[in-house]
Image (cartoon, rainbow, N blue to C red; front, side):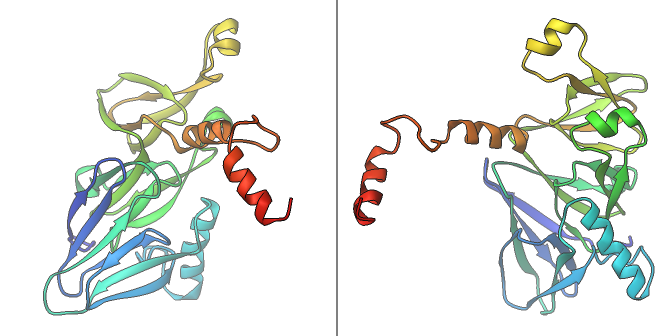
Amino acid sequence: MNNHEIDYKIYGDDMQFVEVELDPQETVIAEAGSFMMMEDDIHMETIFGDGSGTSGGGLMGKLFSAGKRVVTGESLFMTAFTNQGHGKKHVSFASPYPGKIIPMDLSELGGKIICQKDAFLAAAKGVSVGIEFQRKIGAGFFGGEGFIMQKLEGDGLAFVHAGGTITKKELFPGQTLRVDTGCLVAMTSGVDYNIEMVKGVKTALFGGEGLFFATLRGPGSVWVQSLPFSRLASRVFAAAPHRGGGKDEGSIARGIFDMFNGD
């Protein structure tokens, strides 16, 4: 094992958090902003990249590791939490929006998974967080995640977060699964990923499901989410009262605001 071995427990239903148990000198890495709470003797340190050490030594190696994360839209930095005490200690990380936290043991998944670029939450130290380019032009332009997805490599434990309910599908060789491009969370490296256009002009234009869906062909494992964050955000935005909206929407709050502003 090159990665630190960590134990964990997931709490909650729709707004989950994961509590990681660290033995002395064990370390877990996490996305900036996902920290929730920790016990005494746990040291928190901001690091470049993912701290896996797979990109080579020296300053240039660290800059390359951090640069990969910038391409995926993530922060230059990650946070490492190390137990510097003598007994077991706990640190917790919270999900950023309603959904589920998925524990993934990379040693049981071929040492690599590919996921949507904002799915990674935390992992045992040693897990490499990189980028995966989509080689097919159709998947790059219309795949919902663009040319770049996130790649997690190693033999340790990683935690991935996605919206709504998560289901795992096992695909046999040659078996095909078609999903909405935004609903794909993660897949093992053996799954062939492509984009297929919806058949039929009427269905494509008026079906309300978009023009494309993802075609996944086995063998391998696929994780699918029921509520992509983009879909949740669009519904919230559509339901929010806009400037000059209905006369009854927010009328009391608007009246109080106007009163304090002298209107």
